[in-house]
Image (tube, rainbow, N blue to C red; front, side, top):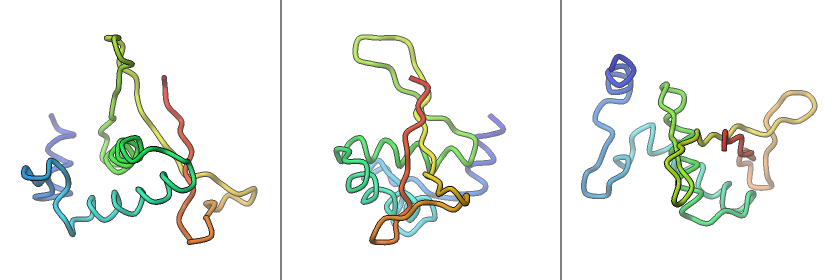
Length: 107
């Protein structure tokens, strides 16, 4: 419960019940939307998978893990992504300047 309270305190009124997503212009919305294109372009993900990955990434910094079970399974596992790194430790970027991410699921 303390993590939820901390998340709400840090992010304020972030949820839009009409769209069932982040309110436009909030920090979570901005981070989320900046990740969709790199996931679909660099990782060749469907828009649905890109949205799932973006949600998982933007809420994990606040201590919230997104879990998923395979169809027909009751075993939930963590969905995670992280920025890909160059040998010098900097984040890899695509030609548009977007960070390239890699999946690091616990599936």
